[in-house]
Length: 429
Image (cartoon, rainbow, N blue to C red; front, side):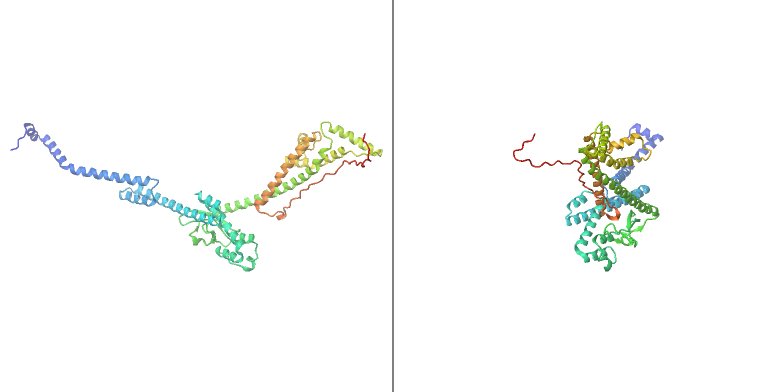
């Protein structure tokens, strides 16, 4: 027979203690179930940690994020599941765009290498910017098109027209110049319009006069529906601004070129003026006493002429010619000041010195200023020539004709003494 201690017997007979012993017994009996519940809770906790780890990892694919969103939904985390599903869709769009960009890059590199344009291929290989790649692709297409037009003649033109969706007209298109036909293919009358792609991306594309849109991948004008495009809603204002801006830029460019042409024409006149006066500085009246000396020489020349004596004075004649020819240069500088009749004496004096019109300066100073003005003028002409070249405008087109540069031989005002060959045995003093 089992033996129990007196303390235990008393405890069993005590109702309060008896209840406590009963609870202990129940707890001991429930221990396996509690342990099982704890294990399940720990397991769910680990699963949630794994789900959140996938959701937050920047390296997770869209598929992994979508699966994690479904797991969250199964756990009753509806809001978190919806947010993660949204992020999964965005990640899918990013992955698709990256794949398309890589395919575009590979296509461009391959085309550039085939055309022998290794530098362009290297540029495309070292960029991941879609806009830059599109620009390179456009350059490649333009080069390919020009080569086909140049090398393949009428059959090449027909193929290009067909590829661009243009109906061939033998009478007009066969007789076009290469440049004119290329302009036709480029769709020079195209306007910018807003479209939305199938994946919701909005972009501005060229639309030609027949309502066809430029496919950014093939470079052809096609119907928008053929490449899954639809017009962007409420973008008419943006299109208007874009096209109006292009018109304003073109207008501003023409105005700038016109101003450049006019100023360059005046510059050439100034350069011709300098060519004429520069040799005069070798023999003329200059320096601090130039004005008094000029006065005296004029009086002497007039008296000599009145008395029938030789009145020639090369220095006087050169100086008077120099002063007269300085006037156009001074006037041009005053014009650049933006001043008119209200020009002050100080401004007029400054303009006279800046134009090398002040004979009280030394001959060396006058020559230096004239050479500086000549260099500045030649730089201006070079800028004009570069602008014409970049605009691909034939010299003299549209009435923009520059005056010709002249290389004048200055008039000789100094007589050369001629001496007969002395007889044999003659000795000079």
